[in-house]
Image (cartoon, rainbow, N blue to C red; front, side):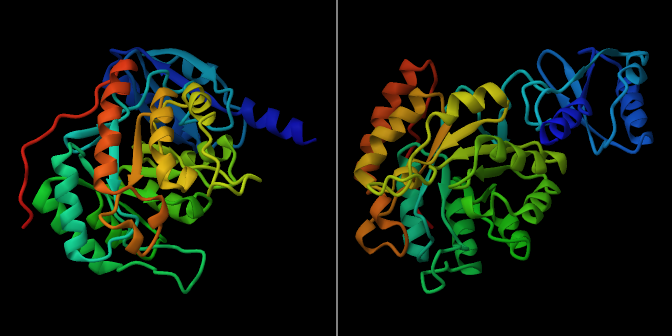
Length: 360
């Protein structure tokens, strides 16, 4: 019975492929046809073709409805339960633009900074250091969903103010976690990239809310989620019309107690095969031991990651959260030097060292 339901749901999925140079009027006609049927069209441009995905349909899609329309090349079934994130929809890799920066292209992206924003001086100092090392993305938690209600929960709105100040001083792009729909507007006002943490990967109200925004989203895999569940969570965001999604492998929970999690690098080639979305790796949470972050970072790039998100703290021993898995700036510098080398081996570029900057 379950197999029949899944099989029937796959039969209902269809992708309309347009000529690459199809007239705008032809594209709009196909989209209106989809809307008149009560469904939702998703226009997904590509280098080799323009595709229009269909969502919201509960019945089988008749290919003949579209094959006779001008500009249509083909109407093909989508063989995966996730439609919009699938390579069936878009064969080439998606590159997510974040201002002048990008994630998913030939250049590797490195996001770095402390787990939590602890003070103005802390985040400004580390931002200047990261800028001088050639990093372009600054991470820092303002709202911290923690396992214990007694643990540090973040500086909240004050942290967002400090992050904005750090961006003004250095030009770094800000990546910060959004905890819930209530605080989403404040986080979105600050962030260049909104992070959905592992605990919220199944928070469908939040996924729908960020889907309504037109701001890049970094979606972390939950510690007990399958690859398909991660891709289905991403589907929620794309279904809302936000196609700028970056996936993140951050380790899964296994029986092994020696590390915080088990970093599932197996997932990278599988996800790359299934989805066009870029994927980065979080080795800090993935293993939870600072002196293992470097080898796992190098392994992640060798396995095909489009970048890394790494916790860096000026004084890990005094960090209010995740100190044991954070790198000191000196150790982080060593890691970056090694990443320069492995990026070249993988045929990718990494960083350009900029001129030093002064904190405000």
